[in-house]
Image 1 (cartoon, rainbow, N blue to C red):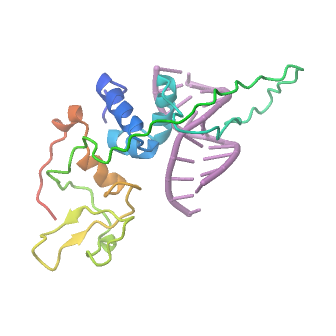
Image 2: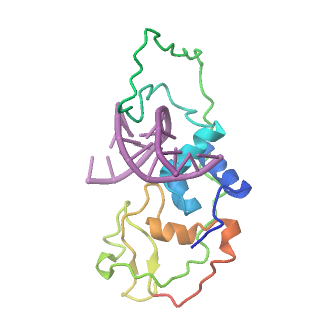
Image 3: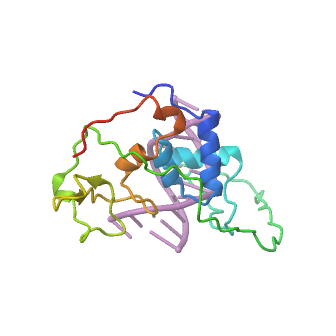
Length: 176
DNA sequence: CCCTGATTCGC
DNA sequence: GCGAATCAGG
């Protein structure tokens, strides 16, 4: 499938903006598409913009070393962090996010049983519209949505397609 | 159980 | 450089 999908300048740029905007790795991954949250976190660290607004949550080891024992009398010095006064966290509730202007249905079939009416729509449910809003048959996708986003992972990828990729993946089928 | 980021290491 | 596996925690 998408063979040429990698960390292009544009994708890195988007990653930067979203991360600095406080978006979580999983959300960013969903919006970028084609990568997992691990990939995002890994990239974030490589870019050197990890852990900005964090105290010191994980000075521990991530992956245990099976056989390799660090048996030496040299205690690893942990760099003490400078007494950072206060982090400037400008709250920007209006990110330059691409609105799901043209929701396009695609072939993948979601479980019909998951569809819900607006009455049953919860915060954690996908708000992807399905059907004609003017009819009583109108439903929402209803699948588990990405925390903080109105859509499930599947629809988020459709709604938030990267600008570069967007043109190619245009698919306008009938709504359902 | 859902999620979060951090770390290590094989590729 | 990349990201899965794993860890540690909310």
